[in-house]
Image (cartoon, rainbow, N blue to C red):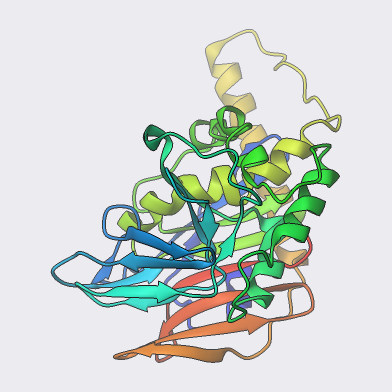
Amino acid sequence: MSVLDLVPADVSGYRLGQPQRAGVLTVVPVFGPAYPGIVPPRTGLKLGRVVTYGSVELTNPAPAGVAIVPLHVGYIQDSAQNHALCRSAFIAAGQTLRFDDACCVQESQGGYLAGRDQWFFVLPVELRGEALALRGTNRYSKLWDDISRFNGRHGLPRRGHLEQVLTRRRAGLTQYQSRLELLDGQLGAVFFLGDRLVGVEIAPDPAYFAEVWMALVCFAYGPAAWFAADEPEADPGPFAVDSLAGLRGALAERRQAVAGEVRDWLSAAAWQLGEPVEEERYLDLRLSTVLGDRAGGQIVTEGRRLVYASLFALAA
């Protein structure tokens, strides 16, 4: 069974590529059929305004196409406290949607960022289970205690300030974007921390995935890998070769060894996800929440066909 078969939808036509590794973070690219007509999240989805703490508006300014809001997307912005969303949603072309169940991820007003630093992220995987459970709860401070514990686990001041990681560690976290290559035609990825499956992210098409790639690899899964990097890793050592042909052969052997190791991890992945629970509809598209003992998230389907998936380990 492929790890993609864990997704509760029709994943026929999808395939996995060659694993890539950066420290303890291993990423397996996903390729598959593109679904047309979905607006990508960076160029086609705009933060309209923060209405008040815990309430934000997003706009789809495109003349055509529906936006699928990335699950747990958040915005670092000027002159307003930083917020993240607890759920995905559909936004039709030219429409604005208000999220009254957003969570403030900056406990006090200190720490506003300059306008040049505006960007979006996806919540670190260690916080995503809590955020998903709090969807529909209108309380702007609802994630502060979890953020405080998250910071404390990593030796940072116990405050509900997510920017302690996302901005102060940003230079280090963004290295994952260059150390792990986004491939032509790639529309998803499977994420491992060590040998543990922690995320399955699949976009409607490669353009959508390219725009959410940095938010995922650097900020959703990068922090856990970054902090784990303080732990000693096995050093494979230099290649014992004396020619270019020997180096190429050694590289091929190492790639095969890594691929075999990851195949074992994929086979051992033991997520048990329940039946999707529909949350929202847009024409023939269905947005559903899926939960299990070890993992959860949201998916978008058309009939049984998979369109979008953001699934993650509930305790990273």
